Length: 280
Figure (cartoon, rainbow, N blue to C red):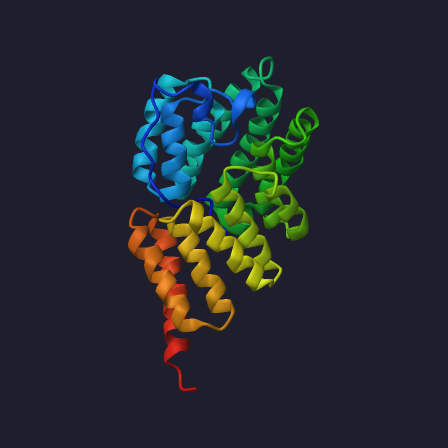
């Protein structure tokens, strides 16, 4: 359920006719960073449409356009994780750390954030390689990850990019109330709403969870991950037949989702099909 990937509506790449601040998915105005058109396009593909093939192609171009942007290598590392490419993932996690460390003089907040994320990515490679047997090694990276993320928060406590990553980590740690507070200060909206829906789901506050999922779909109306999540919530509410409709929508829209995620959606859908057809 807690996969690292994504969702929604494909948008056109923004090129030189747009000011650089329009290319930051997290911030607007004077605090926006000039992340570049290919990074913006890859981010949208990755987190709104679930089109990882297009995202991968744009990230390759982003390495040329913005070779000093750590988000490029972070997203490439996540793609490597999804594809089971352990060595490539480790190399990209280390590259993320190298680029992020070099960013510190001009952008200490994002520097510390991505150094922290690189620690988490490198640690997760042991889980990818060895499963639960790798967890002791994974845990050795956790203190460094939190130390760096806390340093990022010290620099900029209300930064929406930092808040987004912190909130998703809080969901994984079971800190649902804290996560909801962080998501409310995070961006972009479709990831913020999705995160709140996850947190409310895990609190068993299914009406609130459904409301957040629907708000997410209002901002990203072709987001397969949000259709998947809405199907889960409806199933948890005992609405099996309605749940099946949204699982099917997720599968129809999310043809580019990784095979493992599609199999999980099919598995959950089939359970709801059985429940919907069971004698009352």
